[in-house]
Length: 159
Image (cartoon, rainbow, N blue to C red; front, side, top):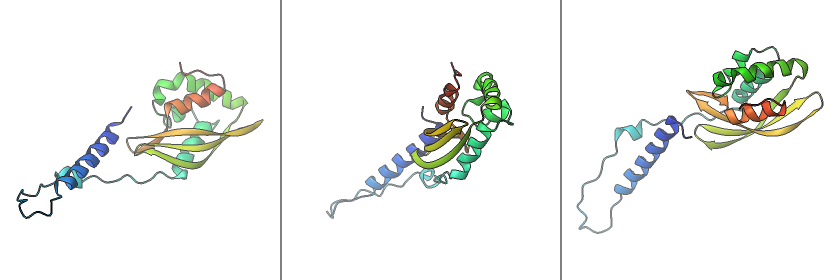
């Protein structure tokens, strides 16, 4: 699902491209069409700052912190409030089986989505997992499907 912010960014990019194309003219002196002006909305588009490993690591630290409340976890997960019941169960799992996550390489998917290779480690070892993060209202959150993937490792279901 494309976020409203991504739609605005894409629309602005398309308008800018169209304005550039319409501003081109031929070498012929017979071309007397007036230049097309660009809408002011395209000039006000500001590219978002790239996400940092530290920003994503903060969200992962809260998600795996055994002392964090379910509400704390919900605040770092996309649609987290809808997942409170399963996050309550996850809090119980973390009390007996602590996990940690270390964010590694980040790959940009689009302006509001990135994937980060994250080493998820527990008492019996760990493995790298690609976790997706979504930017919602200016905050990077663990994507719902990625949170559910981690929860399923503990035999918890988002269904």
